[in-house]
Image 1 (spheres, rainbow, N blue to C red):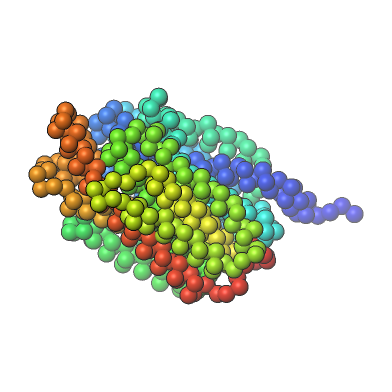
Image 2 (cartoon, rainbow, N blue to C red):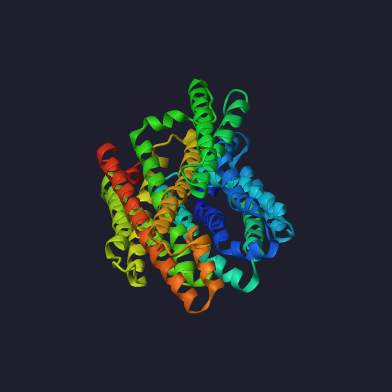
Length: 510
């Protein structure tokens, strides 16, 4: 008797599971790098297109706003429409938007392309985790697949400046977008043949009101956080955005709790393992996002390295992160989740505190110390955030995996934005406070403006100003790192207090 067609399809999918992981990892690497690659390409873009200050803000923020605003909607849409179909559609849009950016001659064209890239990224990211959950039926293999996902996500964000530096130094800012096109086309070609389709059918009509609430609320939240970082804590506009976000997202949550088939299953947060894991991811990304943002400035402006040289000096963090991410699954079979996640956060806190403790009174901080700190941060983040990702997804019923994936990726996006806004703003305020009173004018605005003023001044006076700027920024950056260390320790304490004892999601199926 022949076997049922569904059984044959399942066996084919199971046989291809490692190929599926490779395709999804490659696709995620592209999305992860795209969040940070523009940091390196941006000066070249500004010099070429001459965008105004408002246009510059939109070029930077359009991607994150579109991505974060649509993650919840995209996760629910994939359940109804098909995760494979949504992922491939997202990559088609990603390739078209990148092509538009390559041929852009005006700033508004780059802004539109960046927004479309964010829409494509929102379609891709929840689908990757949902497909992994569908393909990997064995709990141990699934834990390893999630660990690879976390390693690619965290490592890709940190590798963005390195890859961007290599491309931009020789080929200009357009090459940062051109890179996306062949990768996207390859994923579409291989994915259309090798990726399985999966659904999570839901009863009831599509919740357009919930879609509008989630988009408006998340865009207002991310925009408010970003504006706090740019305008400071005394301007009214960021607070108005955050107030709007609080009101709209409260309405969204209340609506989702009432619906029989909600866009987002809010009750997932009733699980302590799920909610604490999400908190650990958020706080970990606050610290990691701030480190990548501040160190990129420190290496380029305070120490005078090129974009590529700066990117290479950040490498200890992503390399360490990848190592511990891949070691996490076997460790989770031997040790309780709470100890692994908590220990990773403590290790991360040690790396964040080290520059502050080692900095000399004259503001000197050598690279060997920073390299050790970056390695500790990478080891800790890789362990804590991978275990948190695996635990969060393992605590989620299969039918709600898309919603959990959207929540996880929102933690990544919000955490990075919060890190830049809060710790980045603190570092800037401390930089301004540590500058000698004799330093006036634009140099007081930021370390970038100070370095530019020193370059314009030139000679001995310029060298003296750059030295003062570098010392002031180092004195401002390291206490911001110390605050990040305190957040990581608070997250560790939360993990040890609230994650139930004995949970080992890598060791049993869910």
